[in-house]
Length: 160
Image (cartoon, rainbow, N blue to C red):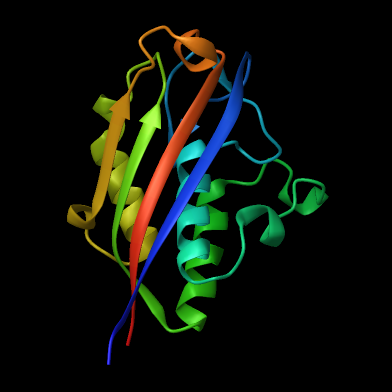
């Protein structure tokens, strides 16, 4: 018997001068980047929350607190890898992921294939199962004014 579970995640980070912009495990050249306790990879954080939610394992902050010094500056691919271990321990595997990144500039689309490969390798699926879309906020609000970055992620898990 198979048990399918849907998960949903969202993450937001402020943007600031002098920080790295890491999205989906890829450092995107930019004069500004995301501000956070870890590397502030908004896309991987949203995926972590989607996976954790689908497996009923709470959220990323529960497992990797932003007040814990061991996670200061940590590469979010490590966090996603640990989340995969947690869902696998409960008997779940990833069927697919669908994501959207909201960022006015720089453009995300040229980096999507590399992001898909990185995420697919971590989730033990093919890049075909990783959908990443990019959108702007049409210069409206903090996202459109390049003051913040947001990502949404949904996932489908299967438990055999």
